[in-house]
Image 1 (cartoon, rainbow, N blue to C red):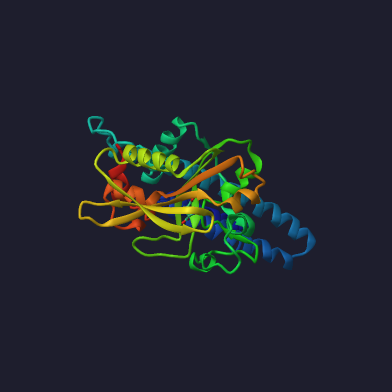
Image 2: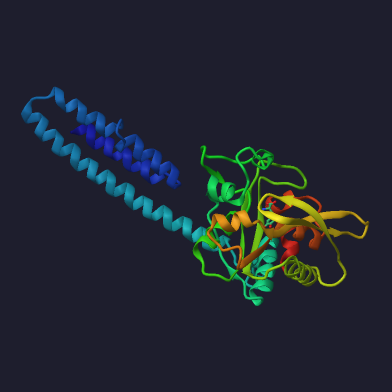
Length: 329
Ligand code: DAH
């Protein structure tokens, strides 16, 4: 009992002299912590007789309560002191200019897709989106790309298993829509496509816009009209465009379109053609009545040409210095 009273006096002195919250916390742990002095006293009670144990445990608990109260009082005092010091020292200069908030803006690829959508929307095209995880049937088989056709390899596809893959082209949506929608069809499908390729002109993910028209008497001249008008509107006036014969398994009369730049270099920007009768038959469209034309535009390609970007990877590096340039377009 005498010992404890002395101890309490010492604690009071310690609390009084602790200058900050950290010192006070150290004191609290020293006296009240799991392995602290009070806990130690409690443990020693085990050695006493039942009567003494009872008597002393009451005394120890009383002292413990007092210590808690003293520490709490000091804690409140120190916090208040700290606050007063901060109020005294910290000044707010209300004449300083505020921090500017920077608004986000659309990514140049989104801008480009929006421009394309607007053009075709005005021509009566429906805009649809399709699944990025495709199956072999829609991505290849139904598009007349035969099992051993090199396209399946050369496109270096990301396969999930023997049937499912990340779509390599938005053309897969031609099949889904022709199977479902009523004729005639005017369709535009923007979206992401995936191929295992990466250098200054290729990224493993890029964007395409697929266009499809199914109607009576659709011919190559309809396709040419649309492509010319779109490209002149997209690049404004002075671009030189070239249709070059090409081959796609799902079109017969196939072409690629190049833009000829100021140095006379040709840059391929899209593939197009008259949809192969086999593809139309795959989706039960009567080829005696209907014909179709289609095109697939590489979005990054035309965005690079429009904005003078040399490396396709800059679109996806999230460098704000690059992105900020497109803030006000
Ligand atoms: N899907 C082709 C590609 O990714 C591009 C393409 C070519 C789309 C001809 C078409 C088309 O719709 O008719 O290379």
